[in-house]
Length: 314
Image 1 (cartoon, rainbow, N blue to C red):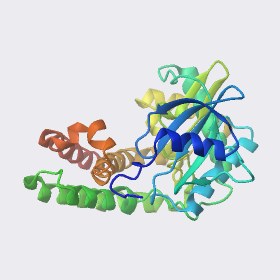
Image 2: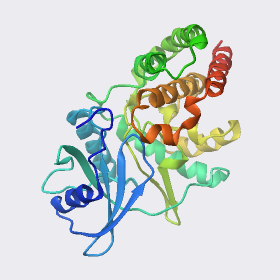
Image 3: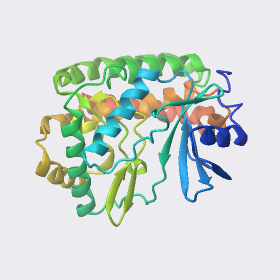
């Protein structure tokens, strides 16, 4: 399997064969769903209905790390939280076919939540508090934590090695990411004792809303970290965060000192996103999806954003 184009051999026939091998006879209907890190498809079944099949990017997560994700979502589902957990096929959730690792899920419908609604935010707050209660029961061991090495230093190194960053920005970029690392390290160390298992990437795109309320999907970025990591991307301003916490604190205490971490978490996300694009640029899907990363102007703006975040942290 090519690391340059890791999904080159994943043609529609292989996708359908993998679903069939898992015990679900496909009827030939196949729809690619938006996903860049992994490959995700909706597949129609002879028996009616659909499954969603997710093919894991080779080399990203170990089998043990994927097992921890699956066990966590199963634990949440057993606690009656509305999550989409992997289907168990022949006693296993992590499956293999033609060199690919994959997992099947039941298809769930829904739309993005209306985050301008106080009721919606309070509902999400209650759900995340329940998730964190379960997340605090034990720790991930194979999936690691939200830290400066994996979310800033390594992505910054990928940017510098990629050839995407204009040469005249190398020195300023090194300086900016070094300053960010120095300022963020101590802040995350201060809350290390309060790390718990998180969804990890809890934004509106990973919430499906129906008349029955929210369902959380895509735990691919689950790892250890502070509770506020699962909250800040849902809150557009201070009022929204207040409403989110009103719901959260109905179910679980929240340490308001963690709100001071939000500029640091925003900085980590921005550097990680740039590094993710740079590290995956060899995948043909990435230049098509993120053409702006090939333009010097975007890197100028990215560096200006980092300078602003450094000021906010100071």
